[in-house]
Image 1: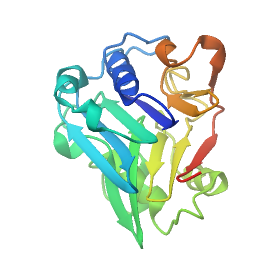
Image 2 (image 1 turned 30 degrees about the horizontal axis):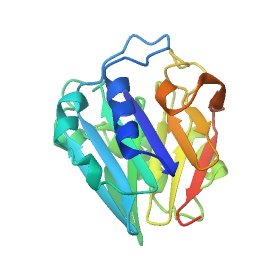
Image 3 (image 1 turned 90 degrees about the horizontal axis):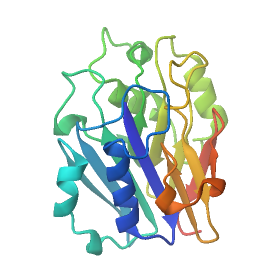
Image 4 (image 1 turned 60 degrees about the horizontal axis):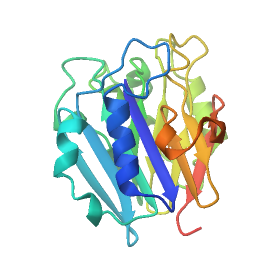
Length: 235
């Protein structure tokens, strides 16, 4: 179970990284879920002069943040992920997001919030090793940035056996990014697994929690379940 945030447009990267730190420490938690702190790894992804850059680490983002050269991050797109490992065995740098996978000519990156323990069956596997990596593979196999639509995702998610909590995700390619809001109707903590969107004249934020420092409460709205927000780089 994790917390995520993305920013697009004109924004202060330091403010976005601080928002991720606050979520990781439970300072902005306003939900019914039992998890407040997310200490099991972190990752950042941003677009710099048309190239995707990433940083990943283990342990707490609060400890890592002072060592990040925030002033060197100059971008119009930034995403951050802070992690609480659902399974204790799945810890370490290999499990820190963003996850990465090539499919055809496309390099895909993903940050995931939720637990999908049955998705491995869609890949023909005998058992699951890491549900988030299996989620990325399942959704991007035979996909292209042009075909990656709400209908495509809904059809794929409808085939997954019950038992998961959420599939909220941020997907990024060289051309586009998407924020995908999805949880099953019986998810145990719908507020915890609902992302929020805040739009200003020159910037957009999507986060696992409302962040008061990035916009007053009236500027945030809950994303609708099965909502897909698409960002085209260069627009």
